[in-house]
Image (cartoon, rainbow, N blue to C red; front, side):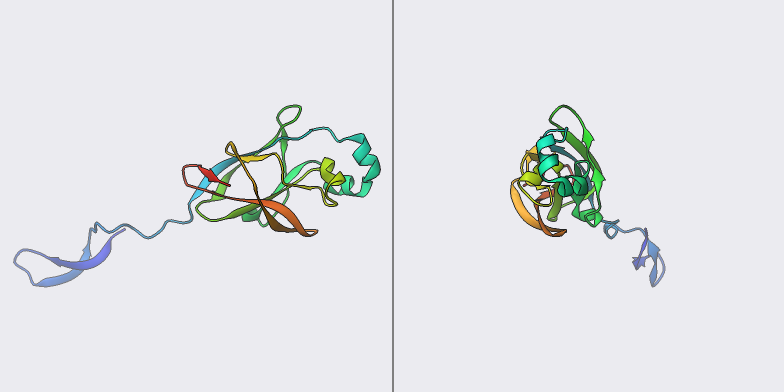
Amino acid sequence: MSFLKRCVLPGTMLLLTACGSDEPAGPSGPSVATVQFVYVAATEIDPAVAQQFPNCVQGVGQTHIHPGWANFGRFDMQVAGANRWEMTFQNVPTDDEQRIRISDPNVCAQNPTGASTQGVMANGVTLTRVVDTPGSGIEPGLAFSVTSDGIVTP
């Protein structure tokens, strides 16, 4: 992008014209990073939890994540082993606090909405900072920040 600035041309008067600039262009948009979330938890619903808390288990359905940068919409996590769920986002805004909530039907025994705050990692870093997130009222979630090169701070 060219900027208007004063350029002195040989044998001419001072002129205002478009010429190159060493000044950086304005921001090209928000910086984003790729973040892989791993949730270490059973991938099969515990029959005892389903029997004791049927409404919660049915309400949660499959284990899923609610990312704040996507207005806490629901994204089903993928099974990646007997005790491992995964989900990767390539659009996580950088350098600001982000919040997520994991919903797991097996957690209905500990939390009436199935919100889990344990066993969650982002790019290999365990998330530990519990925060409020919107859901069925206020529900517990986790906060973190990420740099443009994918380094996560819990």
